Length: 116
Length: 112
Image 1 (tube, rainbow over the protein chains, first blue to last red):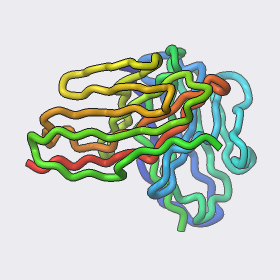
Image 2 (image 1 turned 45 degrees about the vertical axis):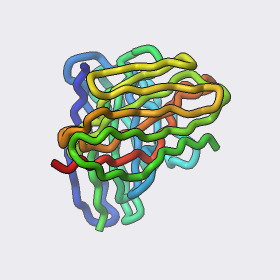
Image 3 (image 1 turned 90 degrees about the horizontal axis):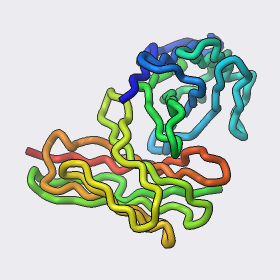
């Protein structure tokens, strides 16, 4: 199967700072990547779809100015949480569908963000 | 709002027990139903991608069935082993959007 890495695996930051999370496809070119968020005891929720070389498409209720997504190459997408607040503390996970049929996803291992 | 429900939320079984869990999803605009296995500190891995009503798929001791008319899928594990301990996620893919809508998952703990 395809391999997706994510860095860092966890991060603790102070309120008001920005945090960047990287998602890399290691053995394939990812035209499209997806960013999900999971709050405790809830399901994975799609935040945005990132396409290489173009602007990300955000889901309803997700602030694009707060969650900046950059997909500048076919192997790297980044999510920057700007001016993080404690309510942004969550588990963030990326994936790519590798252009497979039925949108089967290959996931990274996720990033646990804690904002103090 | 599309709702995907999984039950039970968690399950504790003894090694050797067989078990099953349920994923309920909307019965309209069906495109696909995915099952993923998610071990702690690892990436979720696709187990099955199911697309046709009546589909039955098998991988080793794990199998899944699909009923798109009534909107449910079952995942079965025969003779559970400690290494089966994980969270099992299902995701409904709508034909309208192609996006994945996840259930909350069923966390399975298999005791040796």
